[in-house]
Length: 479
Image (cartoon, rainbow, N blue to C red; front, side, top):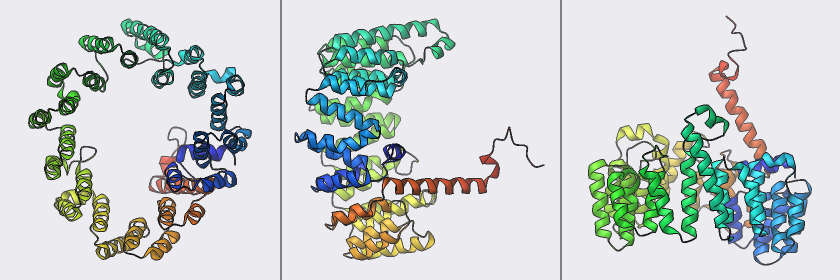
């Protein structure tokens, strides 16, 4: 166990991933998590076990598991230890153990966690004081609102945020780009603060004021961030101001039309919601509105109509493409064969532009349709052209075809990076959790593989373009 490996795990989900931890917990394999936390120094396992023990009131066991991590200076373990101590009524000692050194007060992440613990200990004024110097960072403004919720100091939070909005107003009014840079602000920061003020007003029941803050901001005509109209629309929807929301949807359909339609549906006016969406699609045809219409139709059990509603997007490139969702809807509706037909309807150009995506979807659908032999043949042929690339998909098909030992043997011999997830998950499905844990690389092993792959990628890039790895301004070319 060392800080470098634990830091790497936190960034890359190496060792036992959070998803795998959840799977083991769902299977009741708590003792295995504890064993791996102790023997391998796996933080994800330790954190999950500690959470479960604390929920059961077994604080001493939780603290004992945390001790080795805290002793080497792993900060998340120290924070978690302090959190447990606060829960046991030992707030003063806990806060003393994790109080930031003067040099750390410039670190927003440290101050955020310390402020959270102060709020948990009922020392909300101190928490606000710790965060106030960092309110130039949008995420720490949000943390201020989050950690003070339900703590009974909303007036203080509103006072601090109002002062910040006034400061930003002065910066913006000065019209000085240089000043804005020095203050660490951008032109959109004031809007972010206004949204937070509205959120705090709403949570304390001052809903008219919450709406008015955003209504006035929008009426100012100033340039706003792209998400502001949607935030405003969602506030109107939560407050049941459907007529005002409808007017906003007319003025800014890109941001508010889907929110308006959902509000109509929630009010028992589903037919009107469908008409609003269809009219909007006819006028502008945005994928976002087609997705909203699909969701509405699915909630009404009209799957075929939902699939048809998304059809015009199925050969778009990027996030506007609703094809995969449509395929999933048909599979969930028990019609994987129809999903295969929909995939096969894609044009030759789309298939040529997205060959791996189409092949992956096709093999998945063959499995869902029970056409295992056909899927195995196609995945095997693909593997012959691209050795190892299709091992995970081929293994899943072998497993579903009743050949789990062949599937496991394939995964054990594979070098595909996804095997680190697929092999233990398959072992778990077959009632072999201990083997599954043994199949998961340690943090150090995961890190070594990832770093080797990164070196190999860098070497390939250098081979493709030798000058890419040099500083073209400091190295004299050999000609």
